[in-house]
Length: 476
Image 1 (cartoon, rainbow, N blue to C red):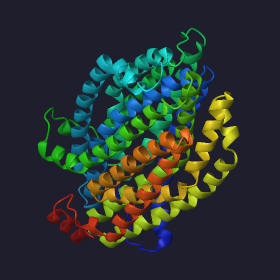
Image 2: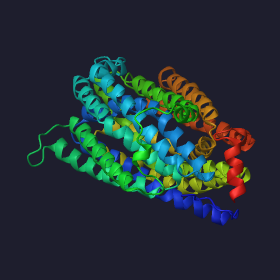
Image 3: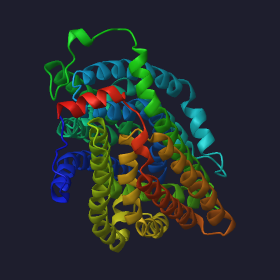
């Protein structure tokens, strides 16, 4: 499903971007919205419940980051082969990635089973007295969610490969099914509706597990039937790892994995440090809850930006696979323009209504006050984040994941963590100081990501062989 065209006019290019972006935007927005609804439902149970889900998710996300080596590598590799006209390669990459996904899921499930509580205790080590409810519910939550990755990781691979071929609608449908199932069972298990037991914060983990399982099974059913040149046919079902394919995937994906590790580990430390802000346990719990609210609001806004990032990855990858380097560059620039136009008005609206939005999650005045200030700080730099999302997506599509990783490490650890710590603790700015550090992180990454993309050096990276690219050009 090659989505690039020979028409280089900006209007047609923007149309191609939007064709790919809107299903991804809707999918990611709904995914973020479900997480926000989950948090709002848990918020009725109090600050500790929000903390249990929020702090546990920081740990889960760092593990998900390790898995991106496989998913991002699969997307970029498939996009290049589709651009080069090698459609059958997508099925080989799909099956190899699915096998590796199951293996990795098993490893992470064991980590959750044996080390969930230890990881949470480490996260809360800066609290004067760790919240018993967060430790109890959070450890169970982590075990359930990581066990569900047996279905969650394959679902991510299915979505990644469909994105690589340019089919954004199938991942959208799969995530709608996943998220609707998720939020329905969350509601039932959190509150103990009908014959379902009342599980509180743990109910979110159960709903998440059921949702991922459902989405994965539906995705496998679609692949068995076949769609968008992808099919789980018997000729591809070889229960042996293809080292050539996996090497190509991890060559692209490992830097992305380190990038995600840098991002999620910095966020993990960011959250752990925030747990120590405050004199009383009530203030510490309020800061943890407020930080989670700001994270959710921020993610709700930037999810549309991630949609354009996914579109840029596919279009830049397919353009380079077809030997059209200048077209790839123009797609990256057009994607950055579109995502900025989208994010600016939304940022203004959220800035104005920050307080009523925060009160949707929790009624605690102290937590709301902390959250509102931090929400407004991070919204100021959202237009710059648009550049980060679009250009990083384009660079990933080109296979230039090493530089994306380097830039992320500089921003996340040099500013998100180090500067945030200095402002939050040494200057006494508390949670607001941490989010000021986050704002500087965004600004630095926007500058560096723009400079890297504009340099054009990513065009020289070889993802598929020059012979395969020449064959693609000859067929045009």
